[in-house]
Image (tube, rainbow, N blue to C red):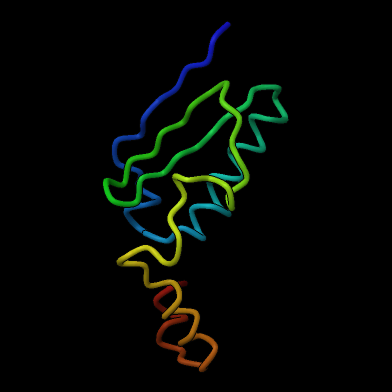
Length: 99
């Protein structure tokens, strides 16, 4: 009847991307939405320093803008912004690396 949870000790997604935008849009929000549709609230709390991710079932997730656990600004080590800038400038070597 009560909530439960799990901790992903080393999230492969966080290890590879280290990008909070990709985490938010490709994992955190879709997972929370899926479980909400199944009738179970879920709060996904990634830790970008340890690359752990805590999933708390039965806990309502606050809006990202109001979530005190969500980092402000870019995460140290995130290269997504630089890659996007290179793509916009037409550097094809970046495109091949991302394919």
